[in-house]
Image (cartoon, rainbow, N blue to C red; front, side, top):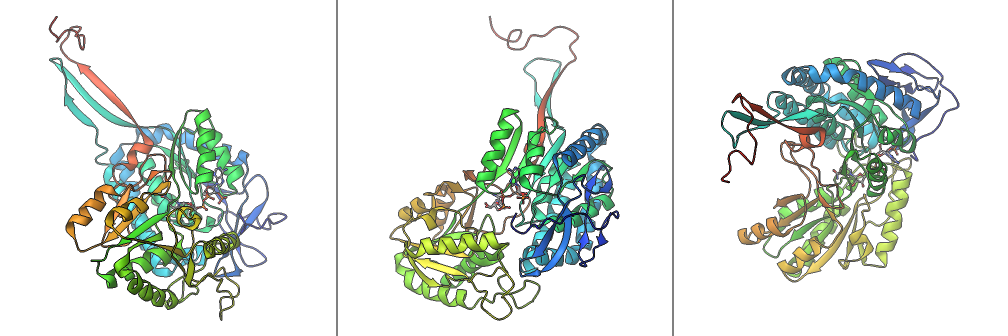
Length: 519
Ligand code: NDP
């Protein structure tokens, strides 16, 4: 919340976006098919992390009353939306996917400006939204259940998916188009309506997304957007008895709080939380390929991906040569505004992230040795008004050191050396997280052992820890989540109830487990 700035009062009251005196447009909530101001009369600003003098816009600092209005709208729209045949819901989603594709460049540029990731990655973020929209549009013609033989004659047995109602969608800033789409598309195609609360660091991306959803033809009330703080807006969604399912992505502490509140109402909660992902490099690896994969995984999105590699586990035979190449590679990465085509690494999201990364690097100096980076980069030309931190590598870190165990969520890579594959697998599995892992090796047997041994939801062979595709399940083990998965068919499990249906057409009472059994 450090980037939000309260303003004393609304300076315009137009519908949609209206320019303010300082030039930044004000955006409204989207409730029941209308763009509406918050009842609080307060707004907050979203700023560009590459240059904090650049105010992207002002957004509604909403209250529990605004959330209640959004939930009322979602609940009212639900019966008609769930009755609409799923293929028709899919057609609306298909239109939305096409609109996302049409507006891809505009959205990507807005994303880079609002949260800093370099433009090529921002395009990838929007593409993930397009991919999941098309995948879930197709689900409108599938939504498979099961038809199975009954144990009794003249009896039909099948299961179908049913929607649940108004779904609460609470999202982080690091994938501001992809993650909301990964949640809202499966929720909507299954027949749920949604109340969407985006991160306070990326309300502009959320607003652009919902504008396109409205244009695609989602009926009034099926999609509702409420901006504002997690404590007020997020908590009101989680506590509402009229929201039976919450899908949340964010940090572990927030996830725990949400799970605790939701448990009191026995509501379903899908949590996608932190990671401490490891890349293993064996002595027989292709080192050129490994270096590329490591730099991309550790420093892409400035290390602010849940799947970012923050641990590098290296077999001792290649340690020095790998480190030497990595040091050179990391030192050569160009920091800057992500809209500049020459930039490799953008800024961190906000001042709190700068403070956190700096604090962990200081801890790391006592737990290992800084071989490159380790300092803010705000003294470099052109970076003085942004949240820039130099890509950092720490070597000789022990597996249980804090920097090797705790999520830093920044451009910091801890290098741990090992003697054998068995040691490497043990190190990979030695954290409380379990999202993504990878191994670079030219030995097929070792690769297959790793696929089996690494206790993570995603395993890569001869690639970095990032690059998930939308048609396979996405999520992690242990404290990375609550056991749910996003994307793929698995995403539908979060937002549907299974209903088993039996039709007896024998014309007589047939007692299951009794009439067809030997006495
Ligand atoms: P936060 O948990 O701080 O915020 C996530 C969302 O929760 C925001 O919308 C935030 O609102 C909201 N929120 C904050 N407090 C509450 C509350 N008490 N009740 C309800 N909602 C609340 O996470 P970050 O935005 O910092 O995201 C980074 C984290 O997300 C990292 O830990 C990362 O690993 C994880 N992540 C996990 C992924 C996965 O798939 N496993 C994918 C991407 C990220 P506000 O912004 O207003 O505070």
